[in-house]
Image (cartoon, rainbow, N blue to C red; front, top):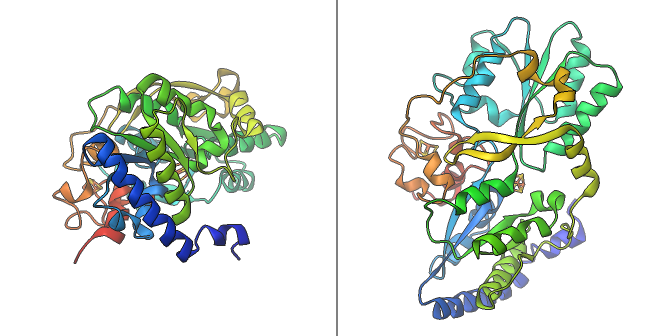
Length: 371
Ligand code: SF4
Ligand code: SF4
C-alpha cells in the first residue's frame, strides 16, 4: 500500500497546478536565455518517469529533455559482457546476476544464449540471494556479477562482509559497480550537446548526499537539482532548476529532501569505502574514465573474481550499428537509430538501452512510439 506521503506526490490536481507553474517558469527561462532550455536527466528512472507521467509530452514546447548515462546496465562496456560470458565458460562455475544483464548482447552473444549452451547462469534479485546459492553449492565457485551505481555497491559490500564473517570461501565478486560523479565529469569535459541544467539521480544521492554534486556547479558552471521519481517530484525539481539557472546559483539543489540529506548515508558509504577503491575503467559511450569503477581492495582479493580467475582481458568488440553510446551522452534520441523498433525491440534487443527498464530505447519503445 502506498504511504500517505507518497500519495501526495501523485495527486493529479496538485500536479496540474504545479505543471502550469513550471510551464510559466520555463517560458520565463526561455526569455532569459533567448532560446529553449535543454535539460538532461542523468537517471534512467527519471527518463521513464517523464514518459510514464506524460510530462515529456506536456513540456515539449517549453524544454528539450535529453537522457543521460544513468542506467548501470547500459553503460557496461561490451568487453565486460564478453568477460562475464568467459567466466560462465569456466568449469563448474555458477554465474549469478540481475535479470537485465543476461539479455545484453556482447560481441558474439548474450549471457542468456551462453546459458542455452550449457553454462550455469542464475538470475538473482540481490547479492544476498547469490550468497545463499554459494552456501548451498559449497563445492562450486559462485561468481556474483555486481552491476550498479552507489545505490547497489553498499549492498554488495555488506554481502561480502557477511560471506567473510560466515567463512563462505566459494563466493566471488566480479565488480562492474560504477561511480556516478566521474561519469558526469567525463561527460561535461567532452564534446556534448549544450545542456543548461541537469536533474541529478535521487537514489544515488541518498547514498552520496547532496554536497558531492556541487562539483558540477563549481567546475563546470552547470546548474543541477536532485530529483525524486513521482510526477510532483519532477515538477518541483524543474521549478528549482529554472530558478537556479536564472539566479546563477553556486550550489546544486535538492528537490528530494524527504530522502536525500546533505552528507548522504554515511554508514553505507563507510561500508563501500572499507572494501572498495576506485580504479580507471571503461564505460559504454564514454570511454575509459579515471577513478570511476569500484574494485575490491587488494586485501580482499580472495573474494575478487578477477584475481582468483584471471582471464586474458578481452578487447572492445567490433563496431555495431547500435547507437547506445551516443544516446547515453544525450547526442542522439532512440528514433534516430535506424534499428529502433525494427531490428531492435525488447524481444530481440540489439543494444543494452533496449534491455533495461532504465534504458532510454526501452522507455521510448514503451511510451513514446507512435504506431
Ligand atoms: S539506481 Fe536509481 S538513481 Fe541510479 S540510475 Fe538507477 S534509478 Fe537512477
Ligand atoms: S534502438 Fe537498439 S540498436 Fe538502436 S541504439 Fe537503441 S538499443 Fe541500440
